[in-house]
Image (cartoon, rainbow, N blue to C red; front, side, top):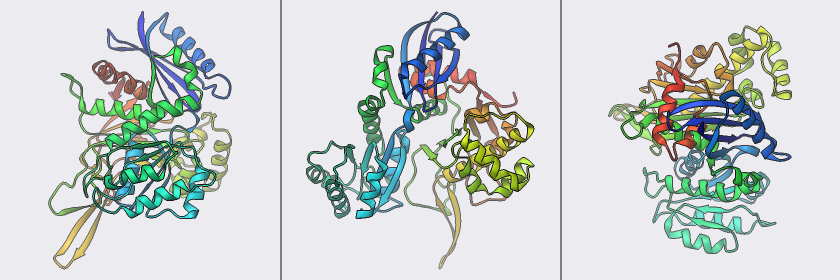
Length: 462
């Protein structure tokens, strides 16, 4: 049978998915260890062999891939005001599938430059000032980068005040400099899509080659994007629909991993009434955040720090004094899976706390402020309370028998009315872990990808 194979080169596992482009159905999935330290083709070959055993003989007419191998795409961004251009830079980086390793505001200092050098980013996003506004900050920061000793090798994407862009490029002569439109051309107006497209192109041109994935170019039709970007594309398609095929509408999705927890929202999130004032810049309809300190294994200690051992003990039924020891063992052996009832109880507690923390950080907040004219409400970030659909993905959720209870911790709670989390009465589970694969497929066959997702990403409890 002819099939399209979608490949996800992860830091730990290489995942492959086969899709039937004619019947618009999923043929099978398989996973193998990512052999990035030797020959990445070995892990890919093993995964493809396992796939053929599950799905039967397949003729791959097209092969597409995404990657988060070796930590994915590490970016450092700098802007002027934390709540404005620096926030716009952060949203641009995260929306393109990058991991924000560092975010700086105002003028860079010698200490900042030393920190940037230590971070060794793949790309530096230089922003600052609306068009026609402040020039001094972005020019100062360009000069600080240019004076790095020893000189850095990362490319610089200039996406700030357009009247300073040419001078920034001149200051950084000898560097790889890419100019693109300002991420915040006017106050209250985001324009992050051009920067995101440049980030994805740099990923293709530099990161894939540097990580050794280019050795597989003869085996695949193309490595299209970072894995988080592929997931985001899939969710945009699932929300908005394609051609005559309708989507689900506004939604929130949580990808719970061993090292990070990604949250995506497809919603405007604007204030629902005239009595609420929006603080800062309106966020994009399609938004991604990544919590690098929250995860089920490598970052389990971050969940403990965020939630506290008392909450984890309450969720798991384990003694508080046992929690820390168990989490230390998990971090030391991230490959372990739950074997005892106590293990399962701790995994449930970690998942519930991680989901609650990540969605709370992603969602907006509401604060009552008293003014001479009387009390008003100030909203920062997105109001997701009207979003009625929640999608959960990630091995820790897919395999957990208590997925419905875990989802409850993502939802709006009257106990925390200031946190504008989704009501999300409808829960969907990505049981076959196909979102990244469908994001890849959507680049050439969006209707097929949408049809498969509607079949495979099922409503929980039905």
